[in-house]
Length: 297
Ligand code: GLU
Image 1 (cartoon, helix red, strand yellow):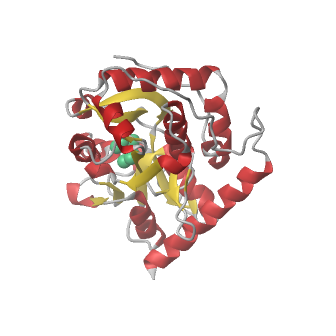
Image 2 (cartoon, helix red, strand yellow):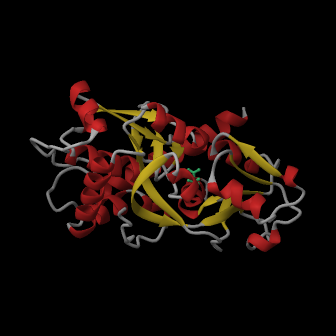
């Protein structure tokens, strides 16, 4: 029953976003939103991942499936949409692979590093913050977006106003995520048991709607998607308290592919593609569309 409630929320959100997307796609090329020109004869010298992709003739991309506006899988059509999905498609197109050559694979926050290390995905695009600890296991191109940790509460909540008002509250976040770590490291919620960790943010949102937790904490961009899907019941507090730089997760030692993806991201920021993608996806749930500065290494 609870699961069905949230599925309905997300379905409504997904449909709303899709419906809006058809109104004003506004692409310069006249191409439908999310469809990108496919590059020909692409070479990425010295990239073992690219060699593997070429030999396979298709791509496997790790994403999220329950984050409306970012990475969302429509339960009726099984189609993925959102800012992260379009960024993943743009990268694929620039590597020479059309949309029908991409297999999206849902990977939750806690399983990302291992999925990349195992080679289960060629790259990962899913609200994945670049951190020093993660860089010990994987590498990142980007950042392609900058978010900040925030709080999602019920619409009628009046006592949660920011990170210093959640001390005695029950706050839900996701295992293996930077927001869950920050809640604990900075002791924003005490006792520790009041930090409720689940496998996905949509499970947290269900708990919030059911009154089992007082807030959900993660990146504002993610939370705004849930609030936009359920505007009469949920709101984002709007006091961010971290910097989350979203990177494209890549195998650690594949510098050639990292450089290539950075080049693709750089081009998208200067030729208007980034803005076009943003406007058609995240921009619809009220996030700010500020350009990030790439951190190449
Ligand atoms: N950006 C944060 C992270 O990478 C939170 C979102 C997520 O779990 O995907 O941990």
